[in-house]
Image (cartoon, rainbow, N blue to C red; front, side, top):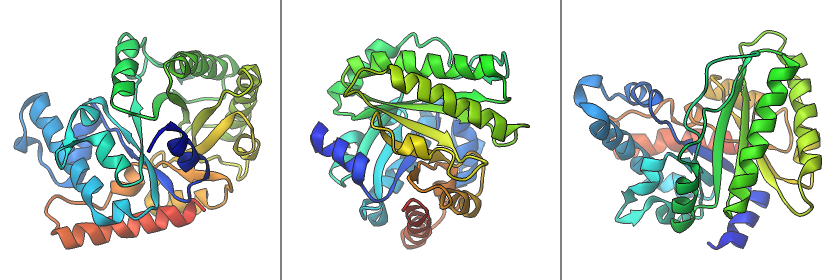
Amino acid sequence: MNTREMTDRIATGHGFIAALDQSGGSTPKALRGYGVDDSEWSGDEEMFAQIHAMRARVITSPCFGSGKVIGAILFEKTMDATVEGKPTADALKARGIVPFIKVDEGLADEADGVQLMKPMTKLSGLLEKSVSYGMFGTKMRSVIKSANPAGIAAVVTQQFDVAAQITAAGLMPMIEPEYDITAENRAEGEDLLLSEILKQLDRLPEGQQVMLKLSIPQKAGLYTPLTQHPKVLRVVALSGGFSTDDACERLAQNPGMIASFSRGLLQDLRKGQSDTEFDAVLGKAIDQIACASV
């Protein structure tokens, strides 16, 4: 797929984007959930080898290439690795799946009720490498924990500032200001978030687009103005700690949003499952998430 084909696939494809980008501190937890004990690896290289084996098993599962997964978000080490002898991005594109790369370097300490992204000291080099691998877009995450107008404005401003650098490099930025689903006054804060995003979208040059990855809002349909905005390629939803069933039920109440789930997709997969069992469990999750994304 070339850039035009990948853009069309994301803009109009029926399905969802898989989040396969666990990294750093979240990897041991993801491995434990998959049934890999901490004693089965030692050091970062062995840890990442274990998580890549899991991701490769997901990517090569017949149901993953069924057409219901239209994109996948990768961690840098996954992008650098291979699947069935091909660079991971090429293995995905061969299955009709558009590749994205996680580019943030983690979260700063909380201030004004939010966690901004840490300074991106490696961004330029990572963007250059991502272009060379044929990636389509990027993803970067901040977190909002309270309805603090100054904090929410700071999160959105930082995201759009970095998005401009990503766009200039020739990649599609996926902006993710996650709203903590356990936060108090979430409905009020999500109204503020919508307002700040709309302000930033209005400042984008004509013809320029971004993607948005947002927590499923407390008020169903809140983000409809974003799903219809000409400067937004697609709005995707994170599962945010909800179970697959809960996330899909809530997502289905928000027309125009599609899923970009991690836990909701992978939570029932286990290393010890036979290939038949693994494919059946993954296929069931894919069908359920794709249905909620229509």
